[in-house]
Image (cartoon, rainbow, N blue to C red; front, side):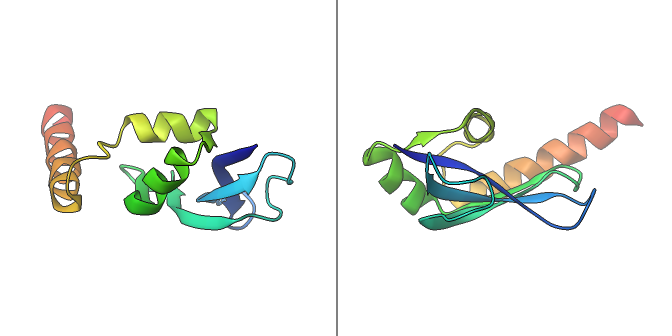
Length: 101
């Protein structure tokens, strides 16, 4: 079965991840079919960049997202244009800073 999952990159204790399509039997950082984007949890807010067209393609072909990727996808509206998402994440960050102050 083909899975959409995270592949760890970065040095020790400086983790960042690539969102990849890989065979379920392949090792976590091993062979993969296609790189769809990246996820960096160390930024505030965490950075997620995914190629939406290729993601929709693989989901239509029956690829199953891992639990971690499924959680990332819940936070992203796949039908919204890229500009709206960038604006929304910026507005959320501004609101969070205003609430903290």
